[in-house]
Image 1 (cartoon, rainbow, N blue to C red):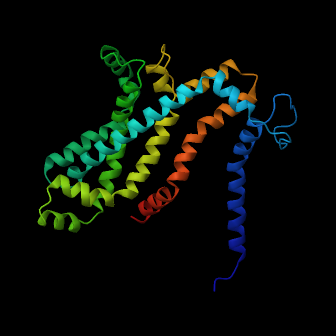
Image 2: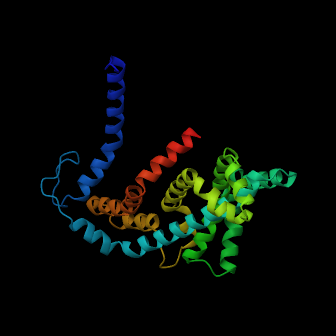
Image 3: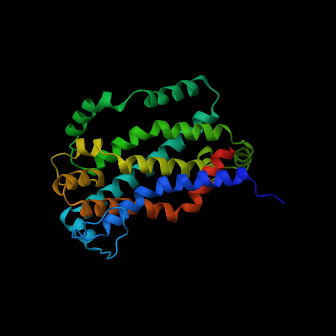
Length: 273
């Protein structure tokens, strides 16, 4: 039987302190979001008369409905394309032994080294010529190209650690390489797929600069851009601002709670690998 030691007690105190540091901003955020504007008590004091009026006003006055839909469309579309393209690209790169495989992998990895700001102006001109400015489709194409190198890097590293026995057996049974990847290899990539899904979704959802650049001058907005305009408009009404921030966080929390078990297993599987 494991004995409770002073070291264990010290670790628990450290974990408790970390939890308090992380949870304190969340407490202040939610506490002020449900507080009436007439309540001028300390932000640290618990709200005695909570209200949801701030959320209703923030939703209506900030036009957050359209921004939320655009963010969901852009994030979902980008993540699906990135995962599909990266997984299909990583499979031959990880399995092929020819010289072109290493050269192509290094070429894709250049996307991790070169900052996308270098191509901001040419990409903007290309989007303008294609008529994609002010459209979520342009953002989806941008994020798909931006996130593919990093996601391909994750998939290649994971695939190289996977044994080839199962896919070789599938080939013997008559599966084509594409069928073997779809039915045998890709299900085994669940840990890295979930990890890539989370990282890409957070990166796309929270991005501010790109939507501001490519959606500028249009009625289309994503949540970060809408929140920035909302803060500038209601800079003195922090209750509405915090309510808008809570609204922007809710979709990511829903995704986390729905995929909680898969996310934890994905990170744990990646660590074990």
